[in-house]
Length: 165
Image (cartoon, rainbow, N blue to C red; front, side, top):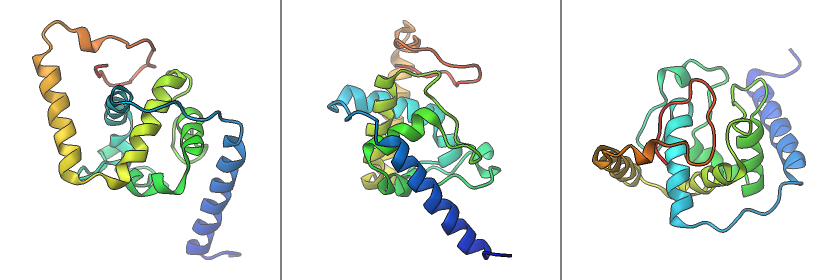
């Protein structure tokens, strides 16, 4: 073969990174981040990303364990991309890598919230992530009105897990 498996993987990753960088050049600057955006980003991350990528202290789900290529750990991979690149990836997906495009089902405000949360992952400990999950679970259990289960101003495609906003 022209490339060894390891060299081929490096070449594919470099090509993918360059492709994302070129396409993300037209993405506008991210909006300011506040605690509401981070909370919204966490909710979406937990519902849509953890199954494939895992989270601090959380293994990938069965679906993510079976994907080829293996989805990167976002707590490490998020460092390789700037905000615009992360936004482009979340919005458009990565062809032939199993990364879906969330742009068809989510507005830019929600996508930027996911990016804001992704950018916090590299510094987040397992304990900090577990505390976020516990706080979210407590809020959902305490919400007997169903107010947090609304669509939050956007729609979800078929198969999107229920999550509050």
